[in-house]
Structure formats: C-alpha cells, structure tokens
Amino acid sequence: MHIFSQDDASARAGAWLTVSLKAIANNYGLVARLGAGAECAAVVKADAYGLGAAQVAQALAERGAGTFFVAHLDEGIALRAVLPQARIFVLHGFMPGCEGSMAAHGLIPVLNSLDQVRSWKRFCEQAGQAFPAALQFDSGMSRFGLSIEDLAERALFNGLNLQLVMSHLACADMPDSSANEMQRQRFVTMAAAFPGVPRSLAASSGIFLGPDYHFELIRPGAALYGIAPSEGRRVLASVVSLDARIAQIRTIQAGDRVGYGLSWTAPKATRIATLGLGYADGFFRAQAGQASVWYGRTRLPVIGRVSMDSISVDMTEAPADLKAGDVLSVLGPQQDVDALARSAGTIGYEVLTALGSRFHRVYVPAG
Ligand SMILES: *Cc1c(COP(=O)(O)O)cnc(C)c1O
Image (tube, rainbow, N blue to C red; front, top):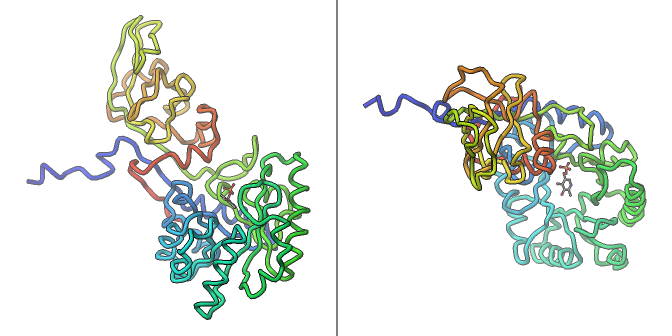
C-alpha cells in the first residue's frame, strides 16, 4: 500500500517556515557582546515569539545563556522540562494560590505588587525555605511593578531571597525620548533600597541606548529574533524565512474581480496565483493592497483581500512558466519580518508572534 505514503510532511506542505537557530545564537552572541559586563539573559515568552521556545531556548543555552524569562507560569513549567538547570524568571508572577507550582518547578516569580510580595513571603515562611524571587519596579510605564510609595514599607521586603530587581522602559525604541533617562534615574533610586541585588532595566531596544542602561543583567527578546531595536537600525541577522508554494494559477480577464468583496478588478488580462496563507499565518486583513511576495528579486503584489487561508498574487512580472507547486518567498532576503510588518501597518513583534503553528517547520541547527 506504499502508494498511500510516498509523501512526507515537507512534500505535503503548502508553506514552510525555516527558523535558523544558528542566526538566533549568533544574535545572542552579538547582543551579549554589546552588553559586555552584564549578564545576557534571553526572553523566550510566547513560545519564543512564535518560533518554538523549546528549540530556541536549547540553542541559546548551548550558546551560554543561563537565565531565561517567560511571561506565564505555564510557560515556565514547559521550559523547565527542556532546561533542567537554567534560571527561569516568570514575568507575571503567579495567580493567587499558585505559589506552590512556582516553587515545585524551580521557577522564580517576578513580584509585581505588594500582594504578591506578601503571598510569596507567607508561602516561604510556611515552607520553611526562602525560595528565590525578583522584584519589579514601576519606573514610569504604569504597567507592572511596585511604586515608589510601595517601597516605603521597607520591612515587608526583609527575608525575601531576592535574585534581581528590574523595571521596563516605555520608550526605549525612541532613543531621543527624555522618558528613558527619567525612568533610568527613577530605577536607580528605587534599586538603591536593595543594595547588592543585581539590577535589570534593558530589553532589546534599551540595550542599544548604551552601557548606562545595562546594569547587571540585560533582557533581550526581539533582538535575538532579528527584529530591529528601533526604526531603521539593522544590525541583527534575520532568523526566519517563509516560503510558500503556489496552490493554483489562473488567468483572468480585464474586468474580472478577485477575492472577498470583489475588491480588486483586473485592469487587463492577468495571471494570478493563489497561495495557502491567511489570517492564521500572520497575514492580516489590513494588508489588502499593501503586501508583496517575491520570486527571486521580482516583487509580486498581493491583490484583493486576505482570506482566512489564502492570498492572491499578481503574477504579471513573474516568469510565465511558473506553475502550481513552485515556490515564492514571503519572508527572505528581499523582505524581512519588519518589512512585511510595515505592509500591515504594524511592527515585527506582531508579525513574528502571529506566524502561527501550522506551517511545516524546519530548524537550522545552531552549531
Ligand atoms: C517582553 C519583555 C522583554 C523583552 O522585550 P524585547 O523588546 O522583545 O527585547 C524584556 N522585559 C520585559 C519585562 C518584557 O515584558
């Protein structure tokens, strides 16, 4: 019955995402050198921005990363199974009553409120063990963390086994913003209440603000995944490419219309290709009339609306002999994640994390 099983996943795939663990590890090395003197942690929340936390974290650990950040407790539990030795911080701390899971998996909560501080202390007292924790300060973003007023209750923090104090910058991707220096100073003031505890302020963009922002630990996420730290800066390697096969090709006549809402009208006889990519794969409705895919160096405009599972492409500039099964490039040398994001009116973070899980995936090993 082998006629039923001659194909494999790569033959069946309509599109495949290639994730270069090598490029991620190299970006880690580059960022770590920029932050020399500080420990370089790695942020692998949201499944390493959609790229596969298990694979990515393993490659980074092999490259020397010893400290990782995730957002949720469950992400930490999953990561612990992959990295038995790593130091893992959970940015959102824990939901009430979940202190035990945190400790059982050797995870370090980032305590963001006085309530969390009290709960963690109570839990440690009951367990008879000062499990490690981190404190986050709100230095101006009003998102997570303790306020200056909260720190006035100094005695409350006695007895905590603090591994890190941290805060987060609101405007680090705008190097000229005066908010950066304002937040930095506030952070220094707040951290001074905890002498000797390592400090961390900078995520990817903050690292590029310079050594004043590095303190004892830096926390890059996006930079590891090749996203530019601020508009126009292009120092890190792209880590993903996305290739899609033509699912169908057809020629339509002048006046024929394409896609939902029949929003695109052919000005002349036009060859169009249908690709099996849509909302579930990081293509957004807002990209109608904006996005492109590529054949080599030839730009091919996406026409009409984006569907749930497909887009249509104007093949006028492509070689006439392209056919179903042939491959077009969506993310690659001609178009990186930031460029595709611009065509959707958004940023690389959003496109990367929206790429979804249904592509066939290929990992290029780190070393
Ligand atoms: C997501 C996050 C990071 C990493 O941010 P990037 O901009 O992706 O480098 C660092 N610190 C905190 C608190 C975060 O939430």
